[in-house]
Length: 294
Length: 294
Image (tube, rainbow over all chains, first blue to last red; front, side, top):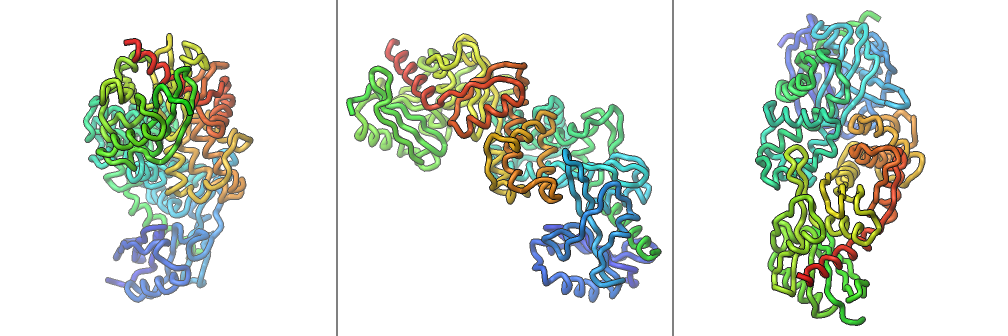
């Protein structure tokens, strides 16, 4: 491997993904492991970064994600909306000048709909910077906490978060529905019927009916997981009040991406799937270049 | 204690409540313990009932609740809506004729909104039989699974269940919001602002904002529990699409009852609080009398 220009770390609560990025913005190497915040004592971050430098190259390191939260390495204040890549680059918190920095998160200080993000801002703005999404767009990044962001002139102007993935996990692990949620979940008639149910606007009310429908033999218990997934993702999409034919740019892996694309289409809108990894690389590379120009 | 006419057991998954009921329908004694289904092997039910008879009187026993489910003592098929106390009495499953019986549950076999109940039917119909609620009414029984039932001419014609209490427990035990949900929950400005947020119809979307609002210092972390409770109970009440000034009869203990009364009022409807214990006794006594007339 040739020497990278810098290392980028998407450092989250549970997982860590490292990219060695070349002078041309290309990815020279990538690693993914479980060395997230939960597995890293506060005094171990410097050693972790030193270890990465030994393996991948003794070059500058940019970190993004929950690493910049109160329970991470160093707390970096949120930037306010509207926020673009230029603000993120200007807001870098240098732990060691020119060597190691943490990207700030973004906050929406709307008293009625406050929200925060750390890490997704790089991917959302990277998707736009790379041209995968236009300068004015609605972006969606599904996951444990699904982020929806309105981008105007390449800046995040507002966003909201739904606990969609976390709720499905909670229901699957510990709820009355748990025994029914082991079945397959993929876009198809069962998933779509869950989305259609969510369109009626009463997803929480409909959840218990999924158990009752199986108990009464109105449907197979193997259908419940896909229907409940459709209900929750459908509720998430409904929350955005999409216009007919409106386009949503979805940043996700293919599995979760397919579900969101299906739900968005079922709601009468249009979806374009974008690789979230490519978007992260495009975003962090742009932040790196902007930070060098300063 | 004088000899009771019969013993009634409200036998649920976790708890069991026993009532010794006199010939005039009055409660001579009552016991509550944790001897629910989870704590009782299938071959131990007969012995449990024999033990109660030794303590409280060697009289007939009527059981209601999850005891009649597949994981209980004996599975009693659901009755279909519309169901009244006369149907419940006719549907009693006698384990030993004239001595020990289990009350059937009720099912709503609507393909779009299927639902089931076991135990609540006695209380809902008992509230009406005792005159605490009118013959045509909307009743609500909050709890882990909140039941809403439409009663016409003293029969349950339709009902729905919301997993409101279970969702709050799941969020409190295991979610990202857990650390914020230890605060006090009572009807007041914080609870009402959660209900008002639910009125907008996007409760799932609003959940994450409760964490963000506390992180950003827009409100105290001590306010979050009451706001989230208001959001979930508000979403539950919203699901009923109550008309302005419509009356809901709420069967609950005073603590949970106050929250539902507050949320119902915040939604512009009217609430009347009824004791669920009194309703159960009225319902099971009426079933007892009807079974003797047959």
